[in-house]
Amino acid sequence: MVQAWRVELLSAREDSAGLLDDWYVEWLTIREAGSSGENFVFPIHRWITANKKLRITEFDTVLPQDDPNPNHRRHEVQIKKEQYQTKVYITNWLPQLKHLPSDEKFSNEYLWDIASMKVKLSAHLKIESILTGKWENYDEIFHLYNDVLTKPLGSETWKSDESFGLQRLNHCNPTQIRRCRKIPDNFAVTDDLLSPLLEGLTISQAIQANRLYYVDYKVMKDLPCAEGRIIAAPLALFFVNGAKKLLPVAIQLFQDPSESNPVFLPSDDFYTWLLAKMWFNNADSNFHQSCTHLGFTHLVMEPFALAAHRSLSPSHPMFRLLAPHFLYLLGINKIGISVLLEPGGWVDSALTVGSKGMTDLMARQLQNWRLDVQGNLPADLKERGVDDPQSLPNYYYRDDAMPTYEAIKEYVSKIVNNFYGNADLITGDYELQDWARNAVDVNF
Image 1 (cartoon, rainbow, N blue to C red):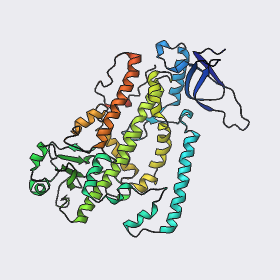
Image 2 (image 1 turned 90 degrees about the vertical axis):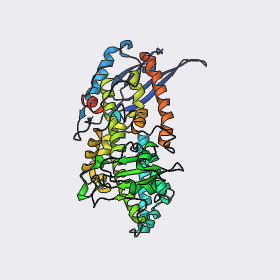
Image 3 (image 1 turned 120 degrees about the vertical axis):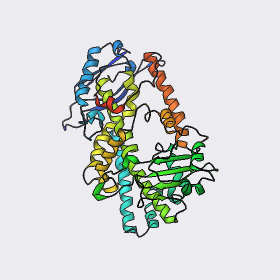
Image 4 (image 1 turned 135 degrees about the horizontal axis):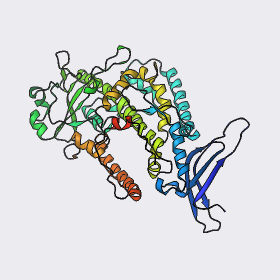
């Protein structure tokens, strides 16, 4: 009879074709004989390679001092250190995975979903390219869309100032807007320019009333771009009007004010103002792809995943807590990024900044990023001065994210405190780049 508290797995299969020798096991459930028999759950979450023996305790969640098989634990961590080696690929960025281990393979189900969607989109685009040919105007772009590639919701409203304001709150970069405590010295706005747009308030009065907000992409100044292209490094000022809507009131496309770098206003010619908003959104989009998405969603998580794999046993409760959030992360980073950032690849073709500008922008922004501020939602909202729903309404990113944050914190706190006692999860003054670059390797 198999003991309920421990199970051994041994893969000894051989395939004459040399295929499918390895198998990925999510969990194993053993049920006692009888109609009322108890279930015993053994989470595995590992690839089991040929002739590999694995010992797993029930629930497989145990601190090192309580592990009945410490030698096996140490051996497994040592193997993972060899598998999860690190290397700095991007100048002034964080360590990344050197070689992709078999444990980070995509599942067949996941690969099938990607492949089937690619086939659908490719077939659709080929048909549409035959039907539409070269676009002659903006409206012809929408011939591409149907039930497979659906028409963007903002396609009818994107020209409006209200839509432009909402984009700062709830679209691709909701973490860049700040309450204006002082007009930046290089932002050439004056009361004479803005008083008609501030419902009778002066700039100082609007600041005191918490009604002025701004976005400053100074991090993009003089950023190298692909093929001699130019990217703006804009500043934009926004006003919460009497109807509680956030509206743009000024855009300066480059950092240094001059006669050739004017401040654009909603009172300018319609298409001049529209082009200013489009240039701003071009910079906003490039920042999103480089930093908000690639740098600080995908890549910033990689050193955490590497440290967990290299330092924690898969049986460690903190590894169990973190592992689901690392699913496919290293795989998509390793495979996807090499394709995206290769010379002449998608980034060079589709983004103004190109691959060189993208990695430079990520490295610049890393110097402004702190784990205890930008990596902590309540601290980030407070630091940017956007935590008050009364002053800045319709900020659904904040309003939806805070309950989610609190739920996650409560869940994590219960698990951590169950193993370590009453722990404060928000402690210290962390510099992510310093912590990650130290190649933390503490065996647990």
